[in-house]
Structure formats: C-alpha cells, structure tokens
Image 1 (tube, helix red, strand yellow):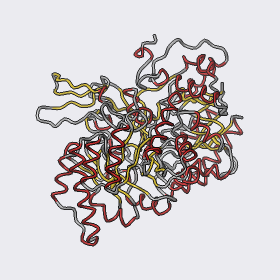
Image 2 (tube, each protein chain N blue to C red):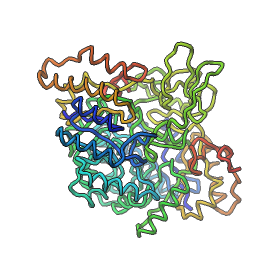
Image 3 (spheres, each protein chain N blue to C red):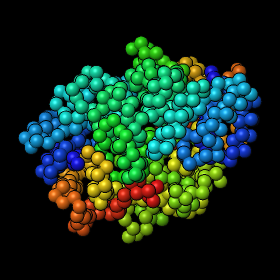
Image 4 (cartoon, rainbow over the protein chains, first blue to last red):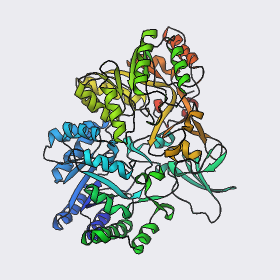
Amino acid sequence: MQLVCPAGSLPALKAAVRQGADAVYTGFRDDTNARHFAGLNFTDKQLEAGLELIRQQGRKLFIAVNTYALPDGWARWQRAVDRAADLGADALIAADPGILAYASRRHPRLPLHLSVQGSATNAAALRFYHEQYGIARTVLPRVLSLAQVRQVAASSPVPVEVFAFGSLCIMAEGRCHLSSYVTGQSPNLCGVCSPASAVRWSDEEDGLTSRLNDVLIDRYQAGEAAGYPTLCKGRFMVHGKRFHALEEPTSLNTMELIPQLSEIGVVAVKIEGRQRSPAYVEQVVGVWRKALDSYRRDPHNFAVEPAWNQVLGNVSEGSQTTLGAYHRAWQ
Amino acid sequence: MKLTLGPVLFYWQRQSIMDFYADMAQQPLDVIYMGETVCSKRRALSLDDWTGLAREVREASGAEVVLSGLTLIEAASELGVLRRLCENGEIKVEANDMAAVQFLTAQGVEFVGGPALNIYNAFTLEELVRRGMSRWVPPVECSADLLSALMQQAREHDIRLPEIEVFAWGHLPLAYSARCFTARAENLAKDDCGFICQNYPDGIPMTTQEGQVLFTLNGIQTMSGGVSNLLAEYPRMQAMGIDALRLSPRSTDMADIVQQFDQVRRGGTPPLALDGCNGYWHGQPGMLTVEEVGLC
C-alpha cells in the first residue's frame, strides 16, 4: 500500500519525503483546496522546490484542488488545475464535477483522484465519476465500516485510498455544513472547518471556555485538557445531560487494520494533516513507514509495536485514538 | 412560484405518515416529495409502500409526486434499493447521491437534484443538467448572492438552467454521519437502536451549555436548531427567477405553513421579517436570524 502524506509547507514536504512517504499531497495558497488556513500551503516557487526533491527521490506529488468552485471564482479554480498540470503533478485531487470535467477535457493526461470531499461512498457513485471523468482513484469518506470498505473496494471501477491516521471527520466529508452554519465558512466553499478566526478562548467564572463565533463549544475545569473547538467535538446538552453529543476529541488511527486493508485491496493509506507542523509530519510518517515496511516483510506476523502507538497517541487529539467508523460499534 | 413539500426527514409511525399525506393531498402544493432520505433502517414503509402511496397522493392531490432517494449510502443493500427506486419506470426521482444520478442517467430519465448534491457553480450544474436534471434544490448553505451569481454565470455561458427550488421552510439538513446521534443520546448502539428516533417526530434539540439551541439531532442527520423561514424573501426570490419553494415537513400543523406561503403566493403581503435560522440566504452564518444579521 502506498503511504500518502500531507504537506502544508515545504519543511513538512521535506519531512514527509525524508521519512519515507510514497506520495505527498499539497494545495495552493488559496481557497481552491480544503486546507485553506492562514500561512499554509505553497507558492509556485516552493512547490517547484518541493517537486524537485520529490523527483530526485522517486516519490509522487498529488495536488488538491478539492473545494467546490464558486461562480465568480471559476477562473481561480481553472487556474489551479492548469498550474497542477503544468507543474507535472502525478495526480490532481478534486471533488467538484465541474472541475473534474474541466481537468479531464483540458488535461487528459493528468490523472484524477476523486477527493474525499466528493462524498462517494459506493460503487455506483464511483462509476459515475469514472465513466464521466475517468478518475483513476478515489479517497473514501470516513463513514464506512471495514466490511463496507471491502464491499466498495470489490465493486469499485477504480482503486481506493482510505484515511489511515489524523483528525476524525465524523460527518461524511463534503456533506457537512456545521461549520458554515455557525461561522459562515464551510469546508466545501472556503476550505476550512471551525476556522481559527472564529475561535475565542476566555477565562470565565465557570472555567476556561472555548467559543466559535460566540457559540459555547466547551468549558473546562481546572486540570482538564482543552482541545481545539471543532464544532463536532464540543460538549453540548441533550435531554438535560452534558456530554460530547457528536464525538469526543479523538484522532483516527487504523494502524492495527493494515493487514485487513491490504487484503481488501486498498491501494493507498492517507495521513491527514496538511495543517499540522513539520514535526508532526515527521513523527507520524516515520512510524507509519515502519509499520508498512514491517507488514511487507512479514505479513503473517504483523503487530503494532507499542512504541509506534505511543508516538501516535502523543500527537492525537485528546491523546486518544479510535478506529472510527471502520469499527461498527463506534457508529 | 410552485410550492413543494419536501420528503419527511424524521421517522414517523406508519399511520402518522399516512395521515400526514392524506392531509397534505388537500393542500395547495404543486410537488410532493416522498420517501426515506436519512436512514435505511427506517422501514415503516417499504419502497413498494412508498410507490403505492405516491400514486394515491398523486391521484388525490393532482400534484406531481417525486420519490426521494437515500443520501448517505454505505451498504450494498442500500444501493440495491436505490437502484430499484431509480428504475421504478413511473415516478420521477430526487437524487441525493451521485449513485442515484448514475442509475437515473442509465435510465435516460429526467430527475430532480436534491440539496445534498454539491453543485455551487453553473459548469457543475451543466454536468447534471445535460444528464437529465430538470429541477435543482441548491445546497442549503447557498446564499441569494451565490445563486444569483450562478444564474448569471449560466446565462453568460449559454448553460440551460433547470427549475430552481429553494429550501424555504424547515429545519435545515446540515450533515450526515455513519454514527446515529439519536441512538448515542439514548446510550444505544446503532445496530440495536430499537428505532428510538420514532419517539422524536421533530428530532431532538441539542443546545449549548448556555442553553442556546444549536442543532437538532435526527438519527445520522444533524439539522439546524431552529427552522429556516424565507417567506419574507418571497418578492426577492420571485424577482430572481426562483421557480419553486420547498417546505420541509414537521409533525404538527404543517397545513398552516403551506397556507402562509400560499397566501403570499396569491398576492398577500409577505411579512417584513421573520424569526428563524435564515443567515445562509443572506450570506451569513446559517444560524443567524435576520435581526442578528442586521437586516431589521
């Protein structure tokens, strides 16, 4: 299985390559990709430098243009596709059918990967994108159980890539408007979720409080670990009870599923986190490389080493990890 | 403008569903959408039951009936049911996933594109229109300005517009998950949910720790806390060339809502402003009321 790693900056890209990423995915410095965060992503020059390194090392570069194009921004999305093609990216990761149509007509030799933001969770939807736009791969949303991933992989017209590690979207990607409902900015249109510009921390009488556009996301007692106020991971009230009504602060970690994913025929595992630091990329990619190599050497005796889990636990939200939807009981 | 009744997003008892549509068949509605769009485990009515009911409602009301397909498809069995729905050969279908678009395109039939399809610009719209999408319900996060810009973009590029139907009343469907939040709130496993969502015919309110109503939990679907109500925007929508307004069912007094919209449609004065989560339409966070947006 190919190890596909995030890079929100040139140092992160270098770290990923150094630690053994088979492919690195990046985005341009605007709202054409789903990690449109301040200070993140690549200028043309940085991307050229990154690409040179990737070519030297025999790795792959995927470029994400995976938000949905706005009517008055169409030219910007078009330009992003053209730049990805001109740079010689090994694949364009896109979600918007209009963008996929443009890319497939204008740059027929540019391989297309359907972004997780395309929300394709089944073989029929994948046939649509394959027949119409010739997608060569898809990234499955984090909503399928392992048995369902198996079904989709078996009947899909294209190879599938799945999320292996990182932030856990608990809603089907591309089908979540929670962020725009509260902040006005959505993953689909702005490439952000629960944006930092809307976050406010304050010490209040009842404890440390996190708010998103003034909406109370969580409140912490002294000594309680406080996490980034992602909307779906706050503590809310239902039936008069306070709890993580949607999900707890936790990260996805599928390392123990490497044998099953491989046996299912998954072609690539993806590390989430273009918004994370080069040090994060360095650590996470490093242990995933070790794990995949260990599996390749001796598939029948694969076991996750405690040291790897410790590294992953340390960089996880709330120091917790979960198998998420892959494990039916989570649902 | 046409008035349409969206599919029931909640899970109601079979008899409640029957009574509801008997009532709605008497209302001045042009299009009635029916079917399960949220959770495939909700089987108070089978696909055949829905089809039969749709025929009856069409007969009784004279309205166009449309069968709405499931939004988040996770299992092969769900895909099988969706395929049968799309191949019903008689009643128009609302596609809420590209799987339905694929099946309907293969049939060569016209279809409605539901709000869960991600269409935000005219070129994407064209991709669907030339495959048969004759009516389109934009994503609920689309503002009036975005829609106007899209319509303008279509005109500039000679892209044929389908009928445009705006989600004008009801809890906004915001997100879909593998996880059932209703079961989670009741401490039940999803696979052993006992159809607990039937106890909540208008969903479960979820508030912040300060009591602010934020979301409504409806099984695997998360909805807006309050309802959105765009009746005050009727004149603007008419001027923009919007073709239809979708009213999303609630369990009580739905006829009153239909009547309010119909009165304005027949020349009654629209209200100046209304409470409701109407921010999206004004290009603001969806949760905001017009007062909070600063429009009144």
